[in-house]
Length: 242
Image (tube, rainbow, N blue to C red; front, side, top):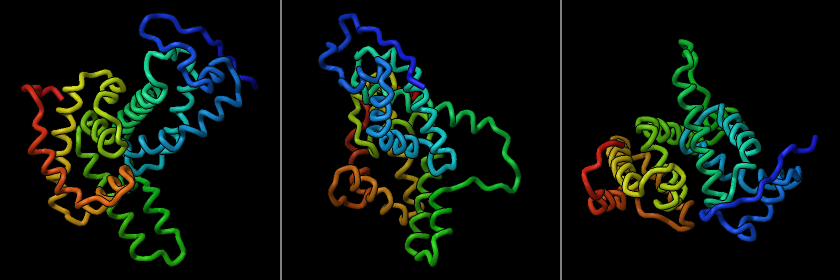
């Protein structure tokens, strides 16, 4: 069934000129089904990674990713180029994931039913799974448990900045908050996370691997640069409403 999307030309001083907006986005706005499929293929991995960073290991991850793209389909006609498409997409991804987290907190928990963990299930189901793979799954579970202790707002900023490499200014646009607030939340998120990491030094390599993947090069032990960041990046002002 063809996409019933009606494209309305962007207007206004803050909108990007139409020749600047990605032609693939414009084609999807006009209702080209193939173009929307290409958008999905191009951005799915990024969306899934952000959802995973915020949500943690969960059997619901794929459902949340699908919900994000359902919302993209519904909201695409409203995209007018007032920001980069990736910024708009990340904002929508964070909002959908945030709503899912809140729904999960409100859902009754069944006694004796542990949460599903895709990494653990994969490691357990693999024939003759090596000890190293099992240990990696354990560390990932532990790391996500530590991230889960952070407040929702701090976790979002930490995931976007430290694990996705999104600049603070863009995070401010994604979350619709001041840059100072982004830096303040990031400071306290790092402080809480790396204080918690001190209680389990085996998790440091997990963080190091994530940062190495981000930067494409080997990293020093994760806690060392973050201690320097905590000492040198004290947020300006006295903002405490995180």
